Image 1: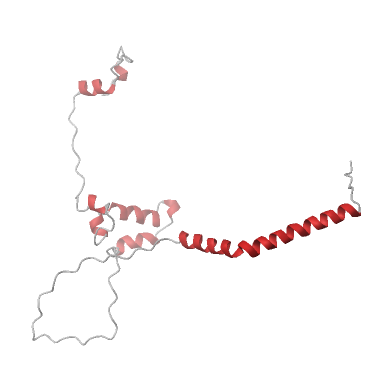
Image 2: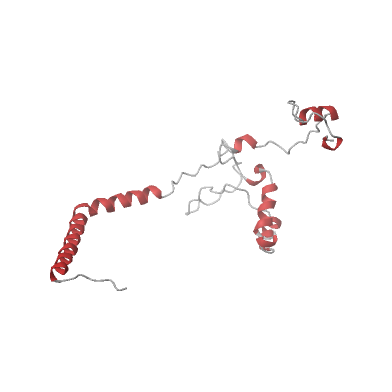
Amino acid sequence: MARQLNMDTMWQNFWKEEYLREKMLRCEWYRKYGSMVKAKQKAKAAARLPLRLPTLYPKAPLSPPPAPKSAPSKAPSLVPEAPFEAEMYPVPPATRALLYEGISHDFQGRYHYLNTRKLDMPETRYLFPITTNFTYGWQLGPPVKQELVSCKMCRTESFFRKNGAFALLDPRDLAL
């Protein structure tokens, strides 16, 4: 079934005028508000950029002991020394070598390297606590396992509900 197009000269002129009117409205709007929209877009793009915080350096020792006068002094260098920016101790070569052995899909390579680094205490990896959360576990030492001393009756009483859901205890249900 074909669609009928009731298009005569009058309708064609109507749609032509409507199209031109829409086009003129868009141009007027862009001329009026275009600069504000661009400014808002730039402001939003600037707000999306990540905030860059300054690097905190570790506190230097108060003052080194005075050097003996007989020692020859080093000539001053023309290049100023760069500030200390490392946050972590260098990785031992044996651990770094794990990166290049195999692939992560086979639990080797980066996967094995990261798991090995995770086992090290933070004090052996970082020079100083970087975040405030580090202070909770800093120099805590190895975890200490404590043996839980409990008797069979204590476990049975604490395991089952007191409301009678297990009125008759089956020996297979007991936590031994």
